[in-house]
Length: 157
Image 1 (tube, helix red, strand yellow):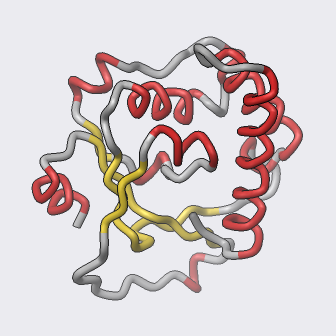
Image 2 (image 1 turned 45 degrees about the horizontal axis):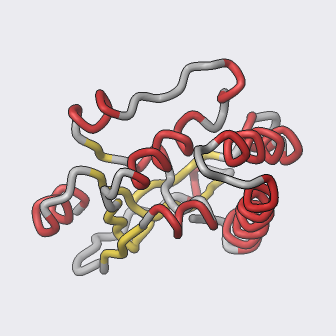
């Protein structure tokens, strides 16, 4: 389905929704047809992380142009930083509006440490070019609120 989306939109950067799970016995894989696509732009991604990394299909050329920042300070946010840089260049992410990905939640994982993740997210936004401190704080807040809604209440992204 994501490859079909890439072809339909001549896209070099596609993703899908995801849903969280704790117990694999609850997983189901229904047939999917006709899922809609949404454009994820730089502004939309900056306000709330909308691109589940494990769902991303991206061209080799794009990853060469925008590699992950392997600086230890970017641990756990290097993917989000990469997507922002790609989107800031004008490339659009086309997201399949259906959860093709199931993400296993386990106690103790880095993404489960809310304070750690918020500190990293603030640093990332603060250091992103042409970003005021107040804007970095706003983007971190909207990211946290969006994360709470989608990951805690809806159990998916």
